[in-house]
Length: 531
Image (cartoon, rainbow, N blue to C red; front, top):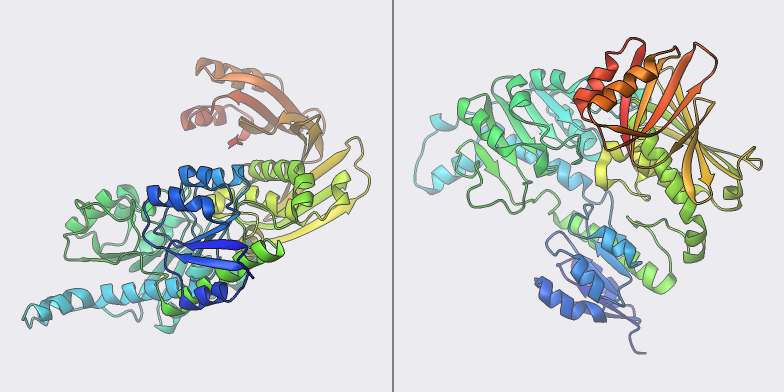
């Protein structure tokens, strides 16, 4: 029997994963690692699947030449090295192996923390140079120290468990943990990042890289840290401003740092931390254990075979796991749900405890699970950035302690189709609903009151007391700053009550504009939502 599918292994994966692929008679395996982009452009047109880790970049140029390509498999979590937009445009599935590196990453973070505490790499280098200098490498104990953890997802939670075994006091910050999840954690949960920075003797980062977290540790926040703090980063290089960390290390504000990730990777020759004696650097090794690499290699081999041989899609980061015909029918609903989620994620406060999706009309002719996942993807984009997708959104919600449920009715009222989202935040409930007007997507309800606003572009969402003059004052502020209002809609229960106004504006106003609006009497809040 001749092979039906050709799978290119462009980065080394575990031998067991390769064996699994090679054992299938329908598959021809090409192991060609270390290829340049030009070489990949040459070989990709003959491939049905390409498997990578983090080294090889699958660019738009490669994808545009790969006419047969059906799937790119990433043996690992992050897919920064794959042009997902280009793959989606060409109908190419991008898969990853979520969760496969959790233990390895947590253990590496702890290993770096111990190495920082006892200057292990520096002492080793000194011995190899022929010295015997015990006084120069006096360390500190972990026992009784405070460990600050920023980000309490899978990895952060595993680090906390191990730190408790060292008898450390653990304090964490994650603004997206639900109250229920907070109550169940065996560690102290801080209400703000500053509290963690001021108390931590050791600080470890486990947050995704988002616009909100980029440059999280800059000069200002490093100055807030307890003097002599030791910092570990196994998450994303962009979380730390390297030049600011250099100054804090030089001044003694930070006693030491251990980094496994960089921005960019590999770091340039003039990387400002490379020459410092109180810095430990490892080349993105957190996931590099025999166990984790074997696990992700086997997982990605199974997932790619399932797609090629059986047509089953799982762990896809760019499409829902449904058959092509159903995916085509659901596409409008997936887009509407994701935009509604994007709106709610930026409008609602943090610490959500419950999310309820409501469906009515023709959407109920289908399994709405992919639609719910799309809504969660939009909702959690602020939390997890580009790392959240239709596959891991539900898992991420569960990790944060958010209870997700669906309700359905066959009657959509005045709308042919209806998707609603209700969010519980502490004792407050926020709700919004969306539908189609022709092919356009519209926000048509807020907190049970009718409204009409496009689900696109820049939206200013104001909560204010319904009284004359507020809208005019807000309009004047925007006009003075050359921000044009394209449309506006108001939702209220009754005259004089609390109202929500949605302004569709041409271009996103800056924070100083929002602050000026917030100073208008009887304006309770203003948020910029960008879709």
